Image (cartoon, rainbow, N blue to C red; front, side, top):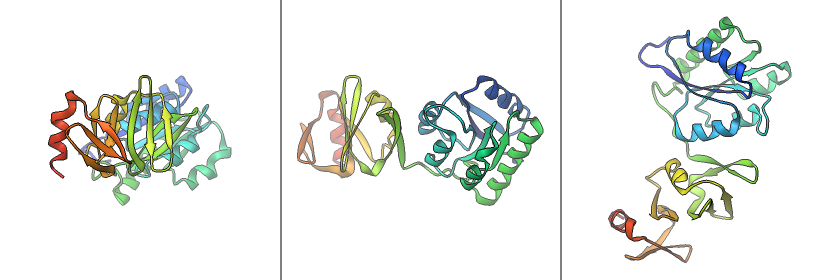
Length: 238
């Protein structure tokens, strides 16, 4: 196994004992760092949006969002080892190009072999962050009791209404209960910046601007006093 750095692993399983077993096994394997352990896919989506992950140990049969759906939705640079008590999902798991498919109860030997398989993929495909990490061009937000994928390029601007947000896209609007500061942290600052405590704009969508407002889709969005100096300095670069 490589010794220059460790890979970042995420564990996703709704059973606490299952997570503890995997954590214990991984603690005995070199060059592996557990960065988080999540009890459901929604929590894992939030973590992946904010951190670089190399490998996910993923249960399949979970409430609300299954491991299969989760695996289909994440960046392809993130590799998956499925962990499940059911054989029925094996074919679908491998069709998703999973590194491995482990049946519970998981032994140390089988998990260690799966990690070794991952490093073989890493050496052959160079998908790991040890060489390069593919930056996501999308994020997930929770809306209408599900996680919705939003491409950054589709966002026009984001508007805050106290305890929820409106994310204005090219063809429709998505409403989510999230703070504007939390969503701002997910966005690439090369494409977006905040002009007001209630507004984040996409740079590509700007039609015109003055010292007081930015026009997007023929709508004048205000530049607040606290953001004005930074916003105008940013806009003057274009």
